[in-house]
Length: 403
Image (cartoon, rainbow, N blue to C red):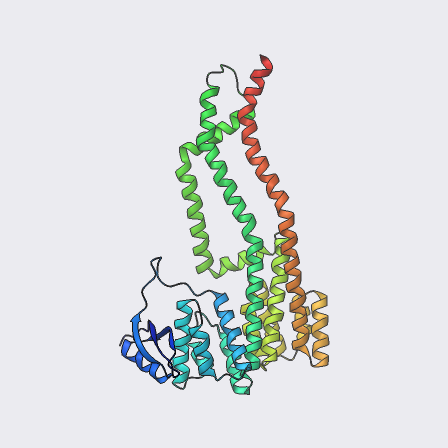
């Protein structure tokens, strides 16, 4: 039997004080929407389906929406608001209709007797095993509001870190794409105009000019193959990254060897490792069990494999700091702080400090990289575009010198 879809309704009505109120709610039918409003003490005067957007339907749920939702729920729980009421307040106040539907669907599950963690687990696309397990640990320990605060902080920090990495990688990529497009336009449309002009000179063209004209002729003849090949390469790359674990592993290993970028990715992986392990450990999750989630959160195959080796060694009785040192992937400072945390019984606090330090390092590296890349990119564009301009005007300059 097909699952009944929730529908978003817009309503107007009168509250218990007789004041006019309006809002949105989700239900499987208008009759159930009216019944839900009456249960809340609202006398509905008008209920209708929310019209669809003219610009392509529902807004997509992004990781930032999930992070904001978890922070709002943590705030509500810390303020003593009951769980179902917190779902209702957060859900109805969300600007994204898709997120609103998701929250209200989970609210219905919780109202029906489902635990918070189980309600989250029904939506694995948005809530991974790590979040579900942490919420479950909070429910079992009777400290849900404390764990929600830690989870919200974890999601905010990890999303912020991802945004910084994307910023560092997007800028040079975007400039290279723009440079290629500008160069292609010059070679296909501008250089041929000069070529027609040069044919009337009756003299040999400079070697550099002949070279640029040769490239231009190649672009004019095979532009479809060049652009098609580039698009095909991008599609092939995405499919290989999506479907081939071996390719992803090779790409992760190669990315760590890129100057500057590799160091940035290495520090980001260490920050994710420390932040995730700190959150899991603070939630009371056993160290060996936590390592499975930590491995998936590192974001790099080399560190993922190293984390699984650490799990196996700690399960065999090795101390965490010794297992980390054996991988040769963690700086001595990190290992020493973990050792201090193990000896003092404050491992989660020490891992938090490590995560804070490396997140700040990533932030500083992104800012430095942006400052360093700007003059390099300007120089690159100047050489490419300036070289084409010089190649086209060089025969004219030589002809003027002869005259």
